Length: 430
Image 1: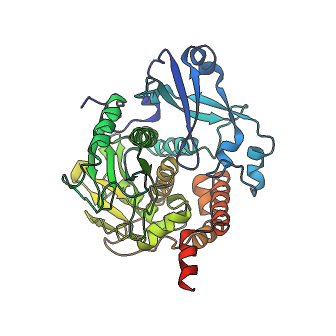
Image 2: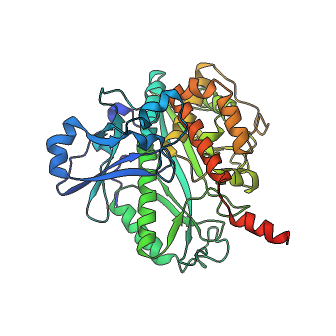
Image 3: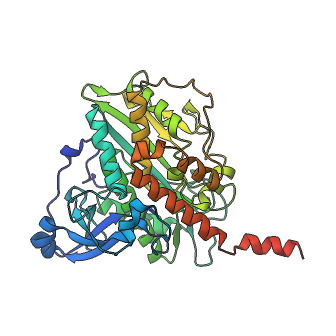
């Protein structure tokens, strides 16, 4: 395994250093609201000559579109400019994110701005960057590690293992060629793999990257998903990031987070404890960030290791927040989000709520004591989100309107679909 070319550990935004742009082809990537990249491939010489200074066009509706890439039909007035004329935003490549892909191209993750230079307030990467700057203003820099679980299914749609293979070596033989090739792809990209293992549900696997600065952690988690999907496709396999692959099963986006000050790591008796208090205070109203899809709520309602009750515990995987590590290595594992959540927005929401807890000097709730719960249905989540000023206070009004519009569209689309569940229920009535 090669040494990661993506720097590890906490870094302030100003400490991120660009890599030199390559020759050949360059893939410009921008994270969209549905945890996927919008992309355009350009000649690297054109990027060096033109794009580096002037940016490159991206249609405005990318940040107000459905999973089917259709513009949202009902948007708040503050979002109208995204879908009224279908004009262009500007992509600004962040060469600190430059990554070599196994197909011989290179990729760079981009920021998005309006032609005036104004940051796009609903672009997930810009939302996270704004929260990182605000946290740095109070003297704190986070280090983040993201765990994603994925389910591999064959051409027949069946999981690639017939049963749960948690921590197993045997029983994963069908997956071995794919996983071996995937490890090589991840190592070749310099992403810094920490672990890879079989998980507890049929066909489920987990690959975890090492801790790094929050912006890189989210960019690289999405790059890892891209590598997973492309490697799976080469083997005729589908990689599914459903929050609930089946009822009673969960695939998550767990976020491990620690904080550093100029004097070293922050502990639970100080900033990290206040941070935890802030997150637990606002986690419920922010449920649409952790659970953005209809399927998300199947996970929260039925998967036993996807706790919706808001409590924390030391090395306790049944808690919504697990305190892991010891001393200087202490970190918080936030277990709210499903595999379908947008990682930049998940981390941004954690940072916003945690910083508010620090600024308010919140005490850490008593360990093991429930202090609330995540919304248990998408309707409850949407009602609480739109009925509170808190999401706008934490993440900005435009982002709050966008997330409400996206969840509303998800509900409308779900209620307009005929599912296998409905057909099965109809047969039972015959």
